[in-house]
Image (cartoon, rainbow, N blue to C red; front, side):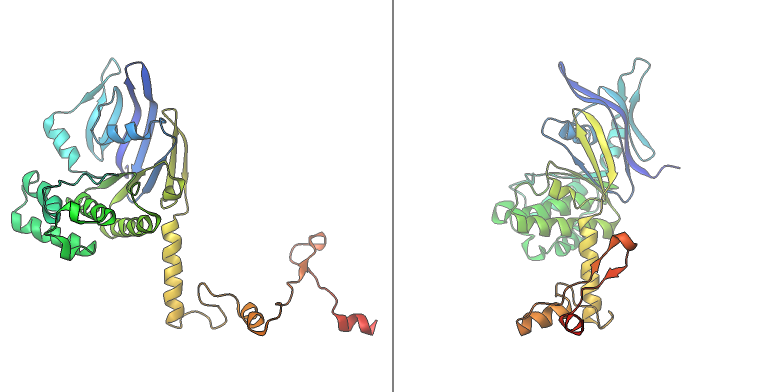
Length: 307
C-alpha cells in the first residue's frame, strides 16, 4: 500500500529539440517537506509545471494518490484523463507563487475565498468563515478588506499561503516562495508556512535554487540536466529550531537540570571567567595513543615545584 500523495514515473518533456525532462521519476510521500533544487535550466521548473498540470508530459505516468492523471499508451506517449479527472486532480494540490499572483482588484478575503465559492461551490458563509480563520492564523485578521497593493511583500505572500491552504489540499507546491522577500521576512514566512502545514497535515514541495531555503526541508531532491541526481534525507532546520524553542521553554519552566545553561548562554565556568577578567581553565588534552577518552592531564605549577 503506497503512501504517495503524488507520483511521477519516467516523465519526459521536450520543447522542440530541447529535451528538458529525461526519464525523471519522483515520489512525494504524505507528510514530506521536500525541496527540489538544482541549477537554472536543470528542469526543476518544468517538473513543477508538469506535476501541477500547467504543462503536459510527452511521456510518463502521473498520479495523485489513487487518481491516475495520465499514463503511457502502447506507443509510449502520455495520455491524460478526461475533464472530470483533471478537475479532481486540481483539488488535491495548492500553489504558492514567487510573485504572489493575487488578483489586484480583489480584497484579501476575496483572494482567499474566490476559488472555494466559484470552483468548489462551497456555500458563501462557510467559505468566508474559513477564509477569515486562515487570515487570523496568518496574522492578517485586520487586513481582509484591503487590496494587495496596500500590503507589504511578506503580507501578500501570507495571503498566497492562506489561499493555497484554503481548499485543504493533500500537497502544496511552492515555487521560490520567498524569492522576492528580504532575509528576515523569508525566515518569518517559512516558519509560518511549515508550521501551518504540519498543523494541517499537508505535504509540502519547495522548488528553489537557494540551498539555504532547501535546508527547511526534510528531504532534498537535486535535479540536473533533466534527471534526478540525488534524493536524500535532510535534517530540517525548522525541526532544529523547534527543538531549541522547546528546550528554552523547558529551561524557563525549571524543567532542565540546574547545571545546564540556558539556551544561548555560555557555560557557567566561561561566564565566571569573563566576569572576573580571567581565562577559563584549559580543557584536559586527550591522548588518543592510549585509547579514546583517556586524559593526559597537564601538570600544574604546584606539581612542578614539588619536583
